[in-house]
Image (cartoon, rainbow over all chains, first blue to last red; front, side, top):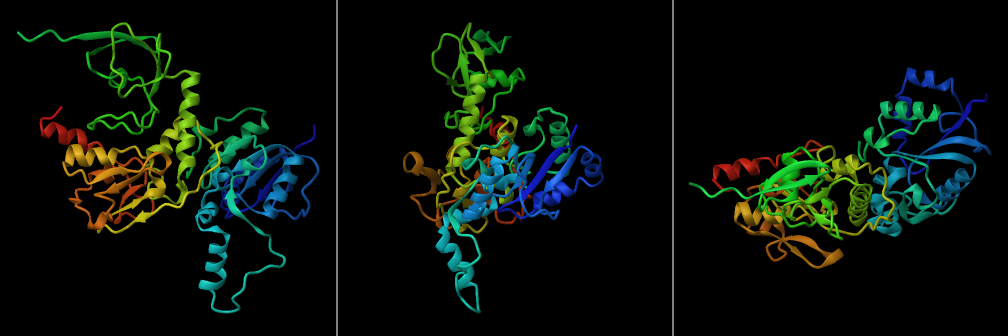
Length: 177
Length: 237
């Protein structure tokens, strides 16, 4: 039997969920006998593969690039997991929603910049008017709240999913955990 | 000889229980260790049935009733935890989360918040409704406390504790529906209102909407239990 193809993705988040994922430490080695990590910020593959079994998505959808990525990921993934509060609820990135894109770019690139005051317009993705959770764009199969979900939560959830079981997420973690 | 106590016997979740006439379903359920989730209810304050989390099914009644204000009656058959009720409760919580800006990770009440913990016990892992992300004020004008309307769920505990226990009635609710907001005096800044600085509203606030400026980070547990002790000392009910 071939191994589970696991991917992890980093959209508009702080990478804290990936840090917590790595905090599984030696348990990650134990779990890794059951999967191949086919795409992740911590490995060198540049292209999201055509067939992925489980994708852990960290971060909210904040730009046209994020939206393009998440639609592509959904198309090529069997089980999509919203990993952490940003992916599940918008969380800290969504705090800009009250100010609008212009309010944010003015603040960052003019009010607080002392040199070369200008809004970058090349090679950077266009920001959406509002930061939104992943499930407002594509269907999500498993929601894993937490900021970040703890390493214990990751271990329990991944062990059960790899064993074909359905974990009771609410007993393990919550918003802001 | 004292008058005989008027006892009502009823069934809650298949369990035979009894309560005094005038007691609410919530009181009798909790006396019998039957949990019903609440947010706007607080022991020691009057009940207003605002949050609707405590809705229960009563046999023969074709609508759901809030257990915090529905009185027990002889022969009642109450269900507190059906699939239908769980669905309604989760939806109510989702509406609360979507209505304002509840960013748990950076909230002063993270880990000590009743909205957060009720959401967890009700199995809520995400909000299906689009977040409204409204623009709401934060009032830091008080020397000791802050009112952050982004976190307010309009439970009105602050309004009731200020009016009923402190006797000041500084807090009230202004506006209607989605525009409702808690205000001090006639919408004066909290700092220049007639607030007595007692801090009861901060202690009874279930979320991070009212908090103490001296608390940093997420180290802000609240102690609403003081209310019952205060009431006992005052020989109130």
